[in-house]
Length: 407
Image: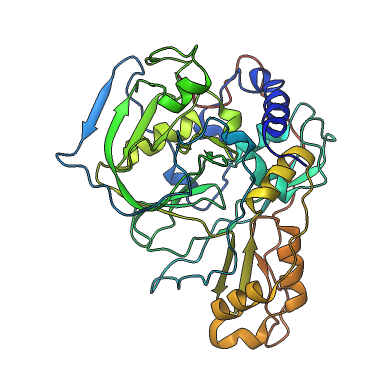
């Protein structure tokens, strides 16, 4: 199946059909349910007024290391017809740093309300759209059955990287901010670059912070769409949203969005997009100079106590399949991937349950599952999701805002 223009058009029309209705009424962040063990750290302080432009920057920008995709933005006006190239999952995983935290959060279940869609549930629980759909492949994303339980995949293995500053795992489409040593990181879903305009991996830092940024189309954007304005200032139509964190990499930044449905999807020109309420919270947390590390690790393996967990995230091509059809082509266990898992398990690799590992790799649910055989009988081999919450709708009525988006 051709994955270029047809994919983008179908996805855009499907999401735009519900987006205006789904996000008309914001809800205060304080009313959101707990989605991760670090939820108390993501409450947004009072943000500066959107109309006031504020810039914070360092005296000298540090560009850091960067591993660019094969092509940079602007190399082709036909990026959307590029073939999808999946990340090589046979590359050995780096070790976790000494004393590193391995997991964050816990699985939950939620009973769908009469007017809920997966877009609503994703934003409510601070998840990305594809992330939620991958964990619930049999749930209709637009007209689910009221009362139907859905898995909230707020349990994750952390990326294998030094746990300093902001760490982004593109495969999870998720950001982790290690704000306080010894405590769980604050985590947010993000939208990232599409094929041909991929978000790069490597090390950089935040060099500038802006409230009310001005969006200026790049030469590539202007070539594709000559009708674009010269610039868009602060306001609800700004593609950068209300806040932006500029990186040491030219043309790349972490910013808000005027299209919240794009979070948890590969649709940007390489920047990392965040929900409007999330970028405000992050903006007020991170200082200029904060280190930013970006990795791409679809397969994660880690020991937690006496249990070995494997988290298999959808590949780039599977992401597209899941977004459109809810299903994906199976990527089975290979000898190369088996070696990656074995090496990551270390000296206790003989305890790997390969049938469980094979199932996890094929299903690509995007959250950790136990793949080790118990040394001795235990009452419960893996944490079970919390009981489904009482059936109710996320919608609270026209007079009650649902998200803390005050732009």
